[in-house]
Amino acid sequence: MAKVLLIEDDTAVAQALMLGLRRLDHDVEHLPDGNRHLGESIRRNDVLVLDLGLPGRDGFDICRTVAAEQLLPILVLTARSDDIDVVASLESGADDYVTKPVSPRVLDARIKALLRRAGRSGRSTGGTQARTVITAGDLQIDEESLEVRRAGQLLELSPTEMRMMITFTRNAGRVLSRDTLFEHIWGSDFRGDSRVVDTTVQRLRGKIETDPKNPAVLITVRGFGYRLVP
Image (cartoon, rainbow, N blue to C red):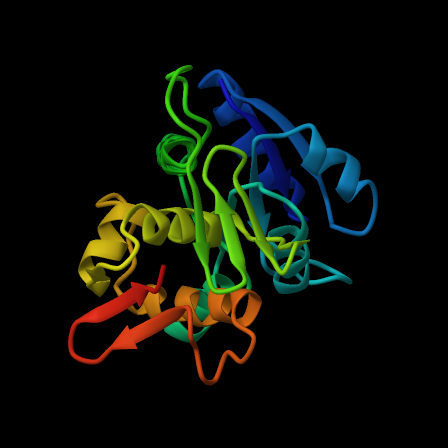
């Protein structure tokens, strides 16, 4: 069972999804917009299902805020299927998206897939496994605590950015192709394409690089992919 925060302004859609998800053993909390009680609700849930077309504060703004401040997977729920809106939601920090109308069973599958992917970068349960800390330039990446610091300052990474950072950390010094990154971070159940890799890399560079336009830590190997310089 997952604790799902659903932000959807259409009452009929929200009620149908809540009923379906609860029948599938999810605990669902509903907000009609992102204007009130958002921080409290995020702290007590496991995943955010977010409609883009909200009154007042739009979904893109909420997505950016949550991605910047919280380690909470974001599934965008939207009636917009144009590439520009899909890419914009991913650039805003979303981890996945579905287009309306969507059945509760499909939404259930996407939520579970999101949580599985988030679990891949979770804390180790090995007990005796050595703590993994990688240094890259002025970065320190602690895989056990899921903390990334630059010059001692803790960085706020979205779940997708953190998974990408951990993937590079585990393969420090190796060139990773876009297809490899796509498979490790999003998985075969993600209905997107490898363009999201470049988008996420650019967003990650904006947080970890001193000069994102001239990256020194997460570099491009033209024709092959990307490499984390340890």
